[in-house]
Image (cartoon, rainbow, N blue to C red):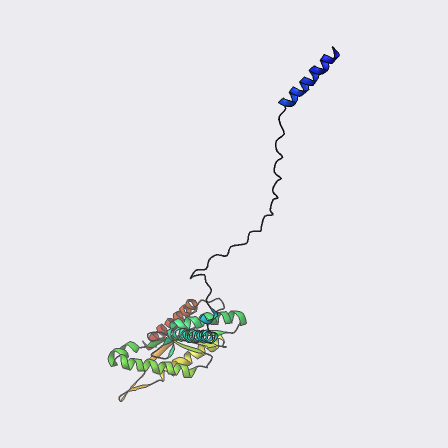
Length: 246
């Protein structure tokens, strides 16, 4: 009985051995992983627009000459601009500044008065009976009279003072460093100087009278303000003169 059990056990073991799956062939060894190589940056392809020009394309001497040429042209243009601006402020006929230029002067002068307290006065002059003379003898003779008046005014004031033609037969004079009493006296003196100015037309001596009013230049004045005050004083003087003549 014991022998029979041993035989049965051996047979069971043999059957199990036949049924057990056979071991597979050993797997191939894993392939070693290669290290990742660093990616090198790719330079963009050059085109006609991006390709650098050779240094020979800009010769140093030629470039320097071109810069100097442009600088010279700029300097000429700047001088021309200044000349045109100055010309725009000049009365071509009488060779004194015009109203536009005079207003510029008054604006700067008011700032100077405001900063330093230097007194200044504007004398406004309007010629008397100029229109009848101009109508009778013509504009060419009238221009000669206006030119003579402008020269008289320039001779009667200092170099620091400014003479201007404000329009037609009206003149302005900016006077520096004088009191109100002195400004009034200077206005009367300018009237006398112009009345004594004579222009010869053939054998006929021609002259004109003038009425002058003045106003002191204030530190906060705009050009139109002081011109208006002096203009009103001039018309008051003209009315008073006509009343005396009548």
